[in-house]
Length: 595
Ligand SMILES: Cc1cc2nc3c(=O)[nH]c(=O)nc-3n(C[C@H](O)[C@H](O)[C@H](O)COP(=O)(O)OP(=O)(O)OC[C@H]3O[C@@H](n4cnc5c(N)ncnc54)[C@H](O)[C@@H]3O)c2cc1C
Image (tube, rainbow, N blue to C red; front, side, top):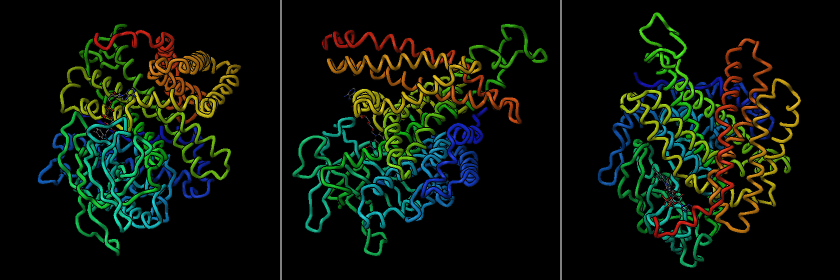
């Protein structure tokens, strides 16, 4: 039996509207069209494409992979047709500005679609995903001419984009970039250098590929402060915006990888390629940072997608596979054995994945809506609040969600037993595909450093307070409500640990930065667990009020999953707290030569 996928539209609506009040976004100038009926219709359409088009191409794309011959990359069979359908359905322009032909929908609406596309075909979803990143960069920092030339093509989907940061000698440390940009008399630049690991760097889905390249000018100061951002198209553009001659950009090879085999990961060579500066000279990193929040939340959605796809595949199997009897006597005596869904350990695995999946959907939708508030809310105070909260939680969403996504994909294989290891079921592909999201877009270790090293102390702890205050208020308000007790007490306990750990890291880290570095990954995990607990407690509150209505089962399942989360997953914060408090000594006291 192969895996299944059904778009989780009901849960998306629950999170987006019942939990987060997403209908308020339509009150913001520019988002008037985003009324709930329109949004639901868009999600339904996207869900249909995900289920019927993307999902069937997932395994064939993985088996076939991308092929590289004479500088040309061929994507797997069916990808071009699927891409054309995706564009015709308007998804490439869904959140883009109407000025460039887009539909102007909130980014949070688009991120739900990103979840569905990634859950059904991680590799495919990266082609439009990268273009979306390039759109955002040019929209935020490009000149009017650049915007008018490139953005409508991205919206149509006829041209695609890439992000070219990584080089052989530098990934995390972009201050080591060597790619050169020499100014020419006509105002353009000569770009020379080699970039590696460039997703969607070359393929056969679009007429042109527009590379956004980080490079160094001759007069650049050394290190990270001397990097500029350039736009380098594969085909040069003529005056009338039609395609001109080939630029000095070529694909040297594609990588053979652990997963996402249907997405091309390319070595891209720039040999006297013509490039154009985006934004200000030497300010390339600042331009990249502006878009990092939404790109990292996007990567977090890939983690959530891994949870969801693995949950659906695992539940289906656990209902059908019969092995052994329930420990407390036969549950299906008419059968030769019981379905494995009766066994406590199988239930532990299924509920773990489910609690992470629904919890992460709530957390990332919350922050996605805050990103929309930041973009469109005319009130500067609300705008600032939204930006603070999104900046704080972005590394948490990226790293926590991709970590639990990978863990969930692994649990999904475990539910299948040995059959999970066999390719035809599709579960092992989820593990291989999910692994990359922990690495790219800044490794999860780097996200943890961003959280403790930058976000925690930002503006004397203002970002932290944006999160701590509403959680504290919620706890105080709900503490008095008897039926909320079982959710609020564990939240309060874990929250207090998080506050203590934050204070300890802030204090110790000032004296010795290795203390903060050593605590960072455990702290980020704890942060994610507490944020999910806050989300689960709020979801339980809503569900408690609706459990006798028309959709009783849906709400009862929410309450039971919240209970499972509080009792079985949140206690991880206890051991994380202990390890954080032991500091960095055992790590740093181990001489380099002992390794
Ligand atoms: C399939 C795939 C697709 C990719 N797509 C793109 C793309 O489209 N565009 C692009 O530009 N790049 C892309 N990348 C590159 C990716 O973003 C980098 O691989 C990633 O940022 C890590 O860099 P690195 O591999 O050089 O690892 P390194 O930077 O060498 O890191 C190695 C290890 O050291 C750790 N480390 C490094 N510095 C520190 C520190 N200061 N403190 C603690 N730990 C540290 C890291 O966390 C990691 O565990 C892709 C990579 C892959 C594999």
